[in-house]
Amino acid sequence: MGGSVWDTAPERHLLGYAYKEFARIVGWSRAVDIGFRVWQEKRPLSKNVGALYVSSHIGETNPAEIVRFAGEEDARKLSAEFAGEIFFFGNLEPVFIGHRNRAIVAQVAEGRSTATVAFLFGINERTVRRVCARARAAKGSPAKSQTRVNTKGTGG
Image (tube, rainbow, N blue to C red):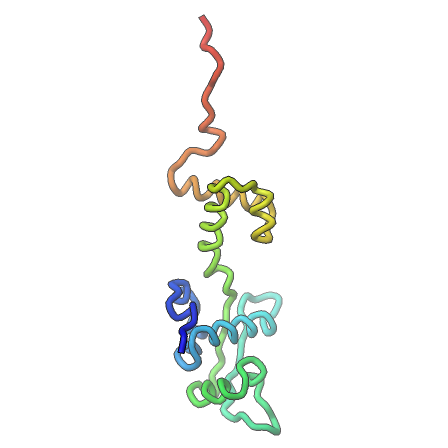
């Protein structure tokens, strides 16, 4: 059986408790899928987490909400382990921001325009410029405006 990319991804350690506990039972790929769906569909607008109650009883007459997110087979496994608990799934975006930003810097370093990179990542050009400027600052490199050489004569 082939493993998921999540089985070895270093980013998985940045995910919260709920993702880790679900992964222990159903595997990383399913845990991320379930958690992301919960986060998308169940978070209140004022919060950045979605909550899911793991029912202790999963039946055909009254299917638990977890069945909708995890499917019956995984819901039964999760229910056997975590019956009666509530799990809070956070946004996955912060986990991938660093990876995304490194990819943006690499694309610009290869010579792609900020407009092209912005289009590829679904962001605006200002964000591309900001990411690149922060990367330069982190490396201790001078900003582009500071690297210009004065080509005018000194007079005399």
